[in-house]
Image 1 (cartoon, helix red, strand yellow):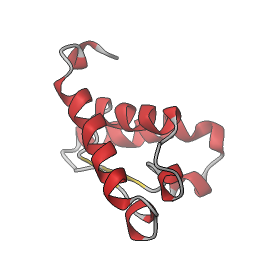
Image 2: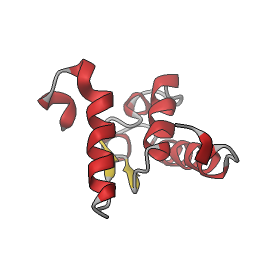
Image 3: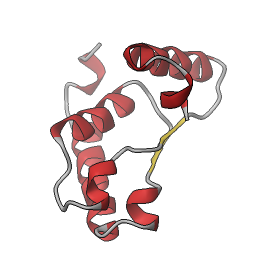
Amino acid sequence: DLGVEIPMETLPLAQETILNAALSRGLPVIVATQVLESMQFNPTPTRAELTDISTAIRQGASALMLSGETATGQYPALAVATMAKVAQQVDTHPLLGMVP
């Protein structure tokens, strides 16, 4: 888990750097771990989690993966539906290609 390997303040830029490096080599990139962590115990995600999903998609992630949210969480189906809704919205937004 990248979040425990590096200082937390460097995580967003490290994720983007790793994503870009892998994608430039034609490698798939999966963003996982704590994507919708709050949904293990709450039916509603945080705004930060929703933004993280959007950011990963806009950065070109090949896939996003839920783990604890669906393995042991109280709202597994809702977590999957929430991720799907956010991903669909980001994927179909007309400005997707224009956002840096």
